[in-house]
Amino acid sequence: MNFKLLNLFILIVLKYYATPINAQSFRGLYVQKNNNIWVSGNNGIVLKSSKKPNQWDTISPSALYKTKDFRDIHVVNDSTILIMSAGDSGVILRTENSGKDWKAVLTDNRKGIFFDVMEIDNATGIGIILGDALKYLSKSGDSISYLVGYFTLDYGKSWIAFNNDLWNKANNQLNALFAASGSSCVLMNTKSIAKKNKSILEFCFAGGGQIGTEIRYVTIELTHKNITKSKLTTAIIPIPEGNGWGIYSLNGLNKNCVFAVGGNWKEPFSKHTSGFKIDINPKKHQFIAVRDQLNFKGYYSGCTNIDSFLVAAGTQGLSIWDGKTIKLVSIPNLNVCKFSDDYLWYAGSKGVIGKIKISDLSRL
Image 1 (cartoon, rainbow, N blue to C red):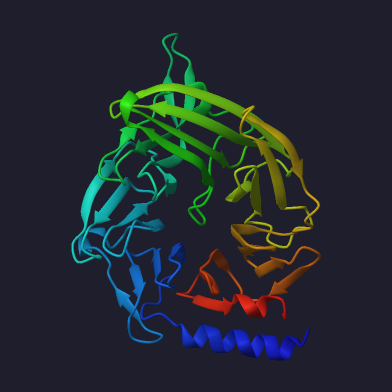
Image 2: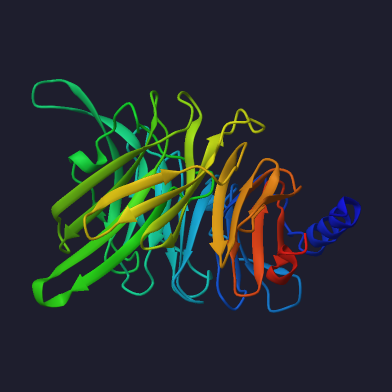
């Protein structure tokens, strides 16, 4: 690889797609197939790719939300968009006119609330918000922690709060999620059964623990009012234990396999394995295997895939697996990456947003 040419190419991309606002960090990224791009970040910032070449439109909500850190964004269509604020109160804003007006459809002011990820299936309108654990008192007076969050059945217009149940109970293998890219949960399947007034949601999520890192595979049945049934399967991912270590991002390769990346943001150049393929048997609702042969090392906060390419974004830049080897594209301090039909898009700190042609990936 000619690193001088590659670095020159990267600098051109970064300059070409410079954003009008020098946000400290972009973590929310939604890529439509037609290359309409939406990003969200701190300081209440939301941007959309402009119809004018290589420019961005600012569609941020009012100054009331200027201190919010919008770590995840979901686009239902060109008009309907949702953004998720992480901490200092959990807030979901929704627009139905492409960002001209925003409405708060969910506000959670509980002390310690911190939302990590929002996922919605555009085929059914069924989705989920997951957040870090909060402590509750049991009937016997013991302190028990549960991951908090909400379900939606109508594209985020309304939300149903979690019950405290086994599937979202925190433990030493999973007591927190990560919001570094709004991708610590992946939807595997959703279904709406109108005749039975029932919806079904299957998803995987992971985070960090004190004595290991657990991934959970959950199936939820619910009505428009409450959760009626849940099923849980777990597996341990072989990643170091302790503060900061864990899985930061999940991406579904298919209904039988999940791509997971992570590490520790405090140790971005660690030599520990931080990329895994996790095989699932949906019919038996069980994990089959956790494979770590991909040779991803260091810290990654986001991941995506297309065809034979697995891509992870992190402190070192983009690590691209082509089915045989990993190639590093050195763009410092990236948070998230997503594919459109033609490009690999990425976003990170200091307002950075860029893209690489998919046809160029094999030539890097």
